[in-house]
Image (cartoon, rainbow, N blue to C red; front, side, top):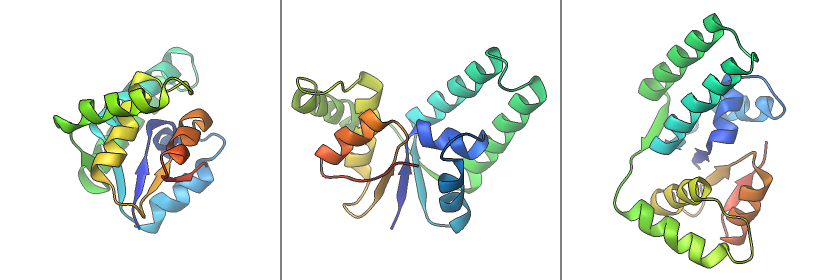
Length: 144
């Protein structure tokens, strides 16, 4: 079994908040963890926002960025953008956006999962709205 972490759950590995223990357990287990190139970008944006909002200081920001880059090299399987991702994201929006609030970046996260992951893989997502949409798609979801 593999895990795909969207950004809302990925951040919990590096910044203690509700749900951190659940994701840290997976992180420490050695099970395969997939993240997307989009997740890399969103992660950096999120920790910089935490810095601007004084949730973390400069030293912590620098340490988190270094630790994350180390994990990119040694811990995660990073799923790259391909021409399939935007098409799949648009298909997901066409299918779900009339009845749900599927945002553009969330559709890309789901598109990475549906394009690269297997049926028994687990989508780890702390965003309940996105997790609900993933469930409608028949994806196994873990909400930390």
